[in-house]
Amino acid sequence: DGALDLAFSRADALIERAGNALALEVQPDGSLVVGGEFERANGVRREALARFLPQGQLDTTFDAGMASGSRVNALALQHDGRLLVGGRFATIHGADCHNLARLESDGRRDATFGAAGGPDGEVYCLRQQTNGAVVMGGDFDMVGDLAQARLARVDAHGEPDATFLPVLGHRIDVPEAYALAVQPDGGIVVGGYFDRINGEPRANVVRLLPDGTLDPGFD
Image (tube, rainbow, N blue to C red; front, side, top):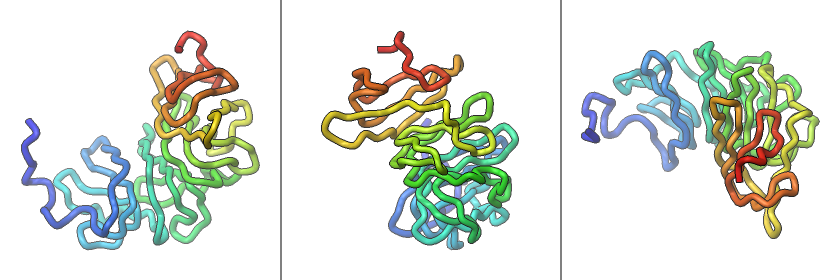
């Protein structure tokens, strides 16, 4: 009914430091993963990413070990319990990992994901397709060694997909993709700041077919 849940943590707990929470993901057991731009959670050092138990206590078994100044903008939970993370960061537990990562259930980086390198700029949004591929939007020009500006896809192993090449454009400014949704039929809805895609006029919201081409039936 919208009333405050007094059983969930304390008034002075959860996220600390002048910052914010930008992404939430609820796990099957009711635990809550929170991403954003913060340094501490419930008094414990947690940079940009933390997990809380169903009653709001910090889950001390989960620690992504992100460096100071990191920011997490987007989260997506896979069916196998691993967690996709997008944002602005360069390392996880001291290992190079740029702006896109997959974490194990305890926050350790999945080193098998993204061996070719991540996006060269910040990731704002991401969604997983039914085949395990990950579509993402953000402020980047390259994913690994592949030129994919603002909107890109990697396969289930984090390798850039050279067949997915939608091109956002704007007549007077730099386009951005801020929001994504994958529909049950595989269609990809993109929201952001743009006035064309693949040379066709489209203002700020567009639907793509699963292969990244423009859906001519959505206008």
